[in-house]
Length: 197
Image (cartoon, rainbow, N blue to C red; front, side):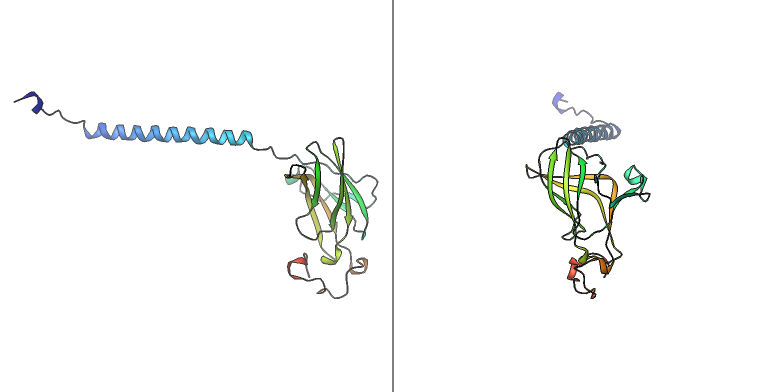
């Protein structure tokens, strides 16, 4: 018998299975390392969430602090309550150390009980001029709840600044809202009428 005619026996089936398992484990380990590295890189480049900030309304007697509020959610007990006085103006002050602010918005709908009219930066604080209005779009027992303010920055980006406690504004009774008529359906224009009705 010639030497090249001699056949060597292949590895036993158990050895082939072990090698296959080892290959699968190596592939999985490499994939896991890749996913971990990608996750760590994205976590290091993602902006840190904004801390909750305390807001003040210096000199405004219509703002009081209430005991109502979820301490587990906000980390502080209580809430701010702004009494609704139609077309009243007030200034909200909050700490701000970010970029230049060119706009601000309270609430997430077209009509809110508080409308931002102007903003100014003063050192490490932001002064937000607020108009109390739009009661015609609210049921008289409605409460508008603000958990933060959305700032528009000069670079075109936006930043949501969460409040340390919610700011509550209760819609006035019918007689205290000069723009509201006795017919509750007058301002019920589809989704524009926001609360009740």
